Structure formats: structure tokens, C-alpha cells
Image (cartoon, rainbow, N blue to C red; front, side, top):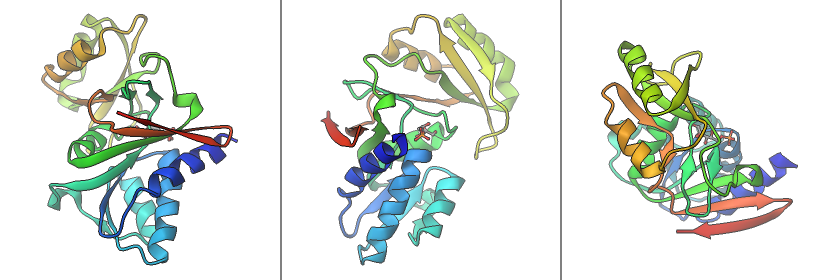
Amino acid sequence: MQDDDKRLAAEAAVAEVQDGMLVGLGTGSTVRFAIEALGRRAAEGLGIMAVATSIDSAAKAAAAGIAVRNFADVAQVDLTIDGADEIDARLWAIKGAGGAMLREKVVAAASTRMVVIADATKRVDAIGAAALPVEVLPFAREFVTARLSRLGARVARRAGLTDNGNIILDARFAVFPDADTLAVAIDEIPGALGHGLFLTEVDAAYIAHDGIVTRLER
Ligand code: 5RP
């Protein structure tokens, strides 16, 4: 059921893709459905290329028959389709449970339009219950941990490394601070390379619940 909703939301977003577009592909289990749908449209003759926000999505896109460009060669993306861990009515989102939020934010910033796809479990009244992932230079691990703690977070280091060779610290807040202030505060920590607060990037969201897709537009 949840997978059916993920697929429906993904297909609604992929319907926005037009011939000639450079499409940004997010990361995660919902995006996997978008990649499959986009692959089907490409097989039917839609002339698109893609950039991917993770090694995993690049591999899935290539397997689906989608031509993937190296984002390092790209300055502008037409439409990016990505998932989220939480999204609210203001289209504020927390991303990064899949660990790709740094590349996802870069690609989102490069995009003319960014669309989030999600099943209804991701739709919240106000973001902040999910862990907020922060990608951190390994060299700065304890320093950034201390700075995040000072902001009121309980901090846990996630196992493994990101596609960029960095670590992730998951920050949880008993009471979520003002999101704008928090984003600025984390942006100002040297060694914190990126975080999962997306407050300005999302232009629209397709949220599916029991087979019905709702579109939210900024
Ligand atoms: C990865 C992300 C994902 O888009 C987010 O975690 C949602 O993933 P899923 O669709 O698997 O629930 O931000 O960094």
C-alpha cells in the first residue's frame, strides 16, 4: 500500500517531465519509482537526460535506460524529483535519511523547479520530529558534535560514509527550534558541510494517500 502510494506520487511528478529536459534525480525508495517511470517514458521516445544525487540513483537510472550526465559538468537543471522524510504545508522538508542530502541540496539549488514525492506518512503538520542529518568532514567530527549539542540536539553518528567520503551526524531535538534560525546556525559551523533542512528549495510536492495524489504548490 505504501509502495503503491510512493509509485503514484512518483508517476505524477514524472508526468511533468518534458522532451529535452535535464532531470535531477533524488535518492531513496520513492525516487526509485520515479526512475522506473522516467525510464519507461525514455523508452517510449522522450528525449531527456538526467543527473543523479547519489551513486545509487545514477546506477538505477542507467539500468533503466536513462542517459546520466556527471553533475560536475552541469550548472543548471530543469526539474528535480526527490523524496523527503518529512514535509509540511509550507513545503518545508527534512531530507537525508538516505544520506544524500548534501548532493540533493546542490542539485535542488541548481534546479528551475524541485518537486518532492512522498506517501502520506511523510506529511506532517510541522517538521522536526525526524532526525536532522548533518554531513560532516570527518576531521571535524567532535567539534561539530559539540556545536550541534550546544544548539540543543542529541547527536548520534551514523555508521558508514557518504558518497562524498564524509560522516553523518543525526541531530534530534526534544523541542524543534525555529527552522530558519537552526539552518543558519548549522550553516555557520565550520566542518558541517550540509544538512537536511530544505526550507526554500521545494516548489511543489505530490503526496499520495490511499491511491489519491494531492499536489501542494508553493
Ligand atoms: C535521501 C533522502 C530521501 O529522499 C528521503 O530519505 C526519503 O527516502 P524514501 O523515499 O526512501 O523514504 O533525502 O537523502
